[in-house]
Image (cartoon, rainbow, N blue to C red; front, side, top):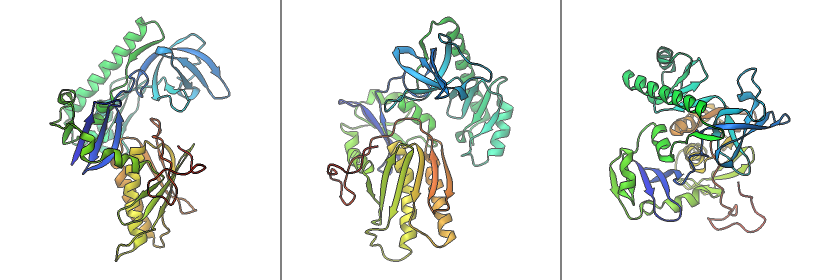
Length: 380
């Protein structure tokens, strides 16, 4: 059962998505709508950094973002002081400015509207992308691009059409406000973390468990009151274990996760596997594939991910592990791509960077959860 836990009281209001009592996502509820992904600003062009292939743009509230030349309309190069309508693609994090784009996208549960654009596409996660692409071509508004999401499969065409019309009206309103508003200014804030979660999930949670029934009432879910929602399933303990360098698998195998600037390197081991029968290497790898998919979501990992599964001699075992990994990633709201085994036997995949990764906990390689001594692995 999928459940949304809302803990609104205390110093750090947060929400958690749990599935069958296991933690899959943690959300910060005090996000700044002006600084989050998908926020749309009327910015002011500033410094041009040719060495970086980008220019800096001043946004509302004094924040600054960088706009790659590759995201500029063809043949267009703004001058210092020009007003530009931009959207935050990746929020500022780790001392890096927010990444911006002039290609606006507005997302709904079934569709994504792109401006400018003229293409009609279907999500790569769709079970029947050809049929969904044909529907996108039929519903695409003139002078806009349209992507139909996997959630559109099975939805009524009238509902999809109504959502596209609503997205088009929002886009036109943004463009109208940009013409009458002095820069820099916020034109539309980022959607709230829970609204974004409910929009992007393939299956909505069956209920919300909250310490504030009024706060949870607006999400369209049955609400169960609880004075300590996170305490029901040990959310804090689960999160602490998930952010450790060493994570244990059900059979006793382990994962070692080492973050780096480009992404994440994961090593799978059978150490401690005491289960009887079957192939312990295949069992550990299948368990690892599912756990890795969960940890990538929970840790908000992004970039290149290299997985060193335990060596498998049979090709059918390798295929089974790849299939398990891809299937486990289907519920990930962030775009992922599994590229397969490299010549060195590593599985290579990517996960789009949309937010800052949660910092990994320091712990000794041979420890069981205690803090790592000075001089050990660095934080992410």
